[in-house]
Length: 471
Image 1 (cartoon, rainbow, N blue to C red):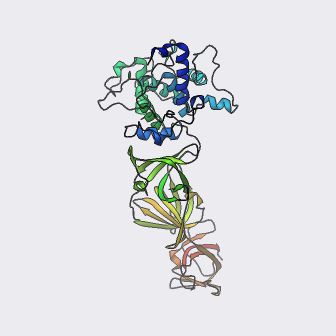
Image 2: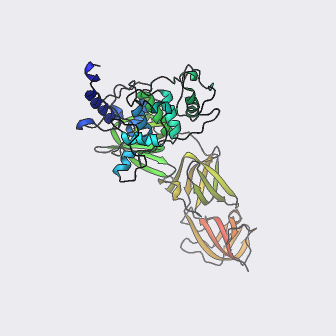
Image 3: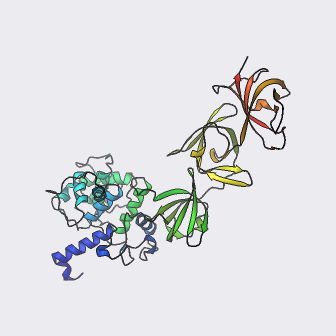
């Protein structure tokens, strides 16, 4: 660094340029910062995957010359801006949208050369450690301990084991005695939440200055732990079922419990398997995370887990009661014995509709409707596939019950049956869905059945018999 940098005006310009780069704005109209896949100085670096993920989501960006500079230190001001933005507290965007400012006025608070709304908000939220407020230097490198305190306060993590007013050093790391006593509960809390980790020698490095690589790793963990507030429609999970190439674009089909969707791939796409770059073909069929850039194209794909080669060991036939999709995913069914079955869904479970062994279509579980009859294929206690059944219905009066055959007072015609064999294997209920002991001659019934061979009238499989009237 030359002595010219010490001049206040030059230092201010340099600081503004760094700020613009960090915030994803190219200074003085010099173009768009480099995409994640084009950082030559992070290829092979331990932070490569974290950098690619966070840069794809515009949480942190590179420099116009195509570098990321993973070992460069992050300043206090930059740390405040990054943490607030990643947690969804972006006062600049709120001001642009015309929303009421949630931060205090900058008058009488810490004055900074850029990012004033973020500092105002940080002060209002009380996330800056007290020992930094009296002599706040926005350009000073942020230590790992300072970042831990600010993030723990921002997330309002509970402090256990000792008080913020000063407690005994935790034995979770070997060097916490080097941290200010008031910082220790926050370091312990942020580590316990899985957001910041120590080093291989058991130390935390509280006085070490945090680097851009470490900051990218922290932001990536915030994504993994659902702490980060991400731009809409920029992150998706599912299993990779196929890829296709068009005239000018390549796309993948991503399948999840909510259905299948096509995602266009960026020309700068990078795929990762446990931190190492890999090819799209090597993760085919696996569960993946897909992150898209602001243009809607997938730029970073990470393998989450391989798809098991599971074969069904049981089949549950019945009707759908409800489907729950969320943190836990379940299919509630009523089987043909009137038993309620709560079946967990495997992450790779699919709903296959169409003609078996011919044309099938994958749809989401939310497409299942209450009362719809399905076959649920189960492996190791979890549903891996659901096939909706093409059922038909017929009503009539029971005239005969002989040798397992239910005969109705209708004439077979146009593939419409007049009887049902093995009728007692069907679910027999009243109008309220309550199980009955059986059908009686003279009962008015409604039969829901399968017709696997439409060319005949003697192959129907009854699934449910509702006794609509009993004399």
